[in-house]
Image (cartoon, rainbow, N blue to C red; front, top):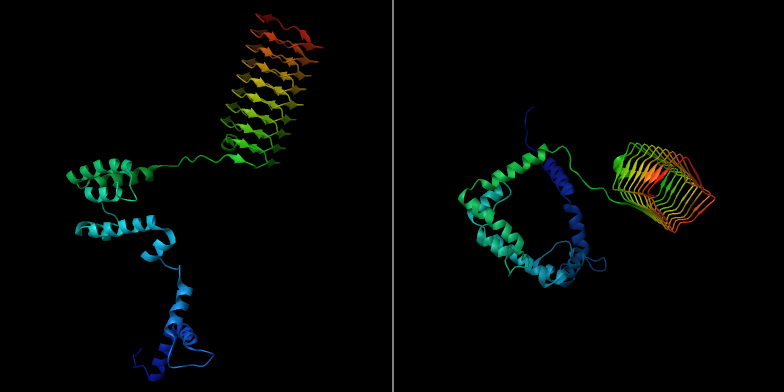
Length: 347
C-alpha cells in the first residue's frame, strides 16, 4: 500500500474528527453563549460576568489552599501546610525512592516534624514506635525492606482471615432452619425471634439469645455451651439429643417443650416458669431453680445432683425413676406431686 499526501479536504476531515472527539466544538459553543448578550454577538465581552459564571459552575470541584481554609477551617489548613513543608524537606534519595518504589522512609527530623507537638498530626505514641525502626534502618538500610517482604510472605501464606461476624439484631428467622451451620448459630441473637426455624447439627458456643423468642423451633443434635437465654420465651421448641452446658434461663418461660436425651449442666433457671416441660432421660447437674414455678413438668429417668429449688413451687408434676442427691427444696411447696422409685441422698 503506497503512502500518499493528504489533500486539503482530507486534512479538514481529520481536523473535524479530532475537534469533535476532544470536545472542542462543545466548548466553543459554550464560549459563544457566554460572549453573547440578548442573542446578539458582540466583539467586546464582560469579564466580570465570565468570571462569575465560571465561579458558579466550577466552585467546589477542586480544592485550593484558599478553599480548604474557607470550607474546613484553620485546623485543616494547618495540615495542608505541614504536608507542603514536609514535601520540601524530602532529599534526592527519598524522591528517587518515591518515583522508583512508590514509598520512602522519613528521617528522624522529618518524623519529629510530622508527629511532634507543634504539628496537627501530633502523636507521641506513633513517634515512639517509629523512631527505633528508623534508627535501626540507619545502621542497616535494608532492614525495612526485609520487614515488608516478610509481612507480604506471611500474608500470602495465610489461608483465611478470621473475621468476627456481626450480631444478628432485629432479624427474625421464619422458616429458616439452621442445619450444619455452627457459625450462624454461635452468633448473638438480639430482638430476633425464631418461627419454624429448627437448629440441627449446629454446635453453638457463646451465642446468647436476648429478647428472641422461639416458636416451633426445636434444637436437635446441637450441643450448646455458654448460650444464655434472656427474656426469650420458647414454645413448642423441644431439646433433643443436645447437651446443654452453662446456659442460664433468665426470665425465659417455656410452654409445651420437652428435653429428651439432653444432659443439662450448670443451667440455672431463674424466673423462667415452665409448663408441660418434661425431662426424659436427661440428667441434670448444678441446674438450680430460683423463683421458677413449674407445672406438668415431670422428670422421667433423669437423675440430678446439686439442683436446689428455691421459691419454686411445682404443680401436677413428679419424679419417676429419677434418683437425686444434694438437691434441697427451700420454700418451694409442691401440689399433686408424686415420687416413684426415685431415691434421694442428702436432699
